[in-house]
Length: 419
Image 1: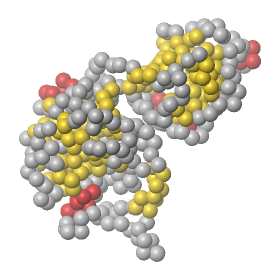
Image 2: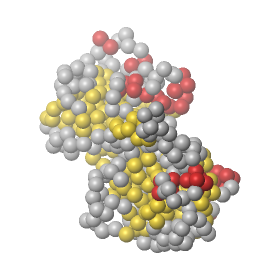
Image 3: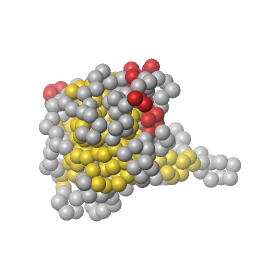
Image 4: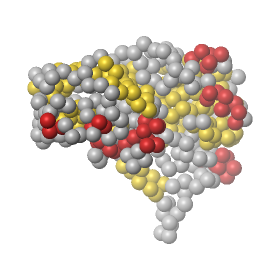
């Protein structure tokens, strides 16, 4: 498959498309289900940080979204909202902190502009401070779209920033390099209350008109599971949010989701990302020919990774799965062919990715899969990882399947073009 075809199709997905969005509650008002951390208590339907409170963060991770909440500071209070937090380290620098601070307090008079209320802590200063006096509820909104962050306070936009620009200016700040992560409440030994926390997740931008003009049809309509085999009870772990098809990560039957229609020759484009952290596990290194290198003891060499595993089945064939995972070799490999000892060395090598093109865990990846006859090409984030690989004995037609393998995963912008 020509590189130019893959590249041109990727270009069709660059610009924004408007979509109606619906928020979801991050805090149920009763308990801390879905959150991790200590030093926080519940009072009158609010989350209240105590002097012992440090970081309280969501179990799920997020990429593109709009976060809305209300907060109330005591006089002189200090807190923060953490975004892109990896779940460890200082949340203000391993992730990004949107500062919550009583600017009027005398003890804060000497702080830098980037440490004041609604600023991105140590990165970008808020231009205004329309905060209400200590003891009153403030409405905060944080919008994250790729590298763009917009902060609003009480209906006033107080900050717009591009993380790419800030990363160039602050190379020592690891958090500004991140584009996804947990959302957290960052305690600073002060009593601060939070309520009405809700999030509106959004799919990555896509040029719908351009994709249609290129001859693609939606494989997922962004609103329903029309065209997919599903049962409201048996497929309950799959749900749809603002154009995103999400799997919770909970094991169940059936694990996988299959199209009703069968496909022969096609190009499939979709976005996907890991929606929660995975367990640490040791997995084998893989060489360019698909084999496992061995150490001095004769055992396969391994490396510790964050285990994430899913995939896209082609033509209903279990062996023809384009893997989505976090192994060192990267996504795109065709596991069933790479490990099959009955396949020729050439086939096994072709089924092994040329390069790891995955973005960091939690970020959206754009993948293109082209299958013509028994020849497969795969590109991830604009880079060709599998090129014209032969898949012997693959059926001429069959359904497409989304595999669930125990990891919380999101899919979006799924389009297909038949040949």
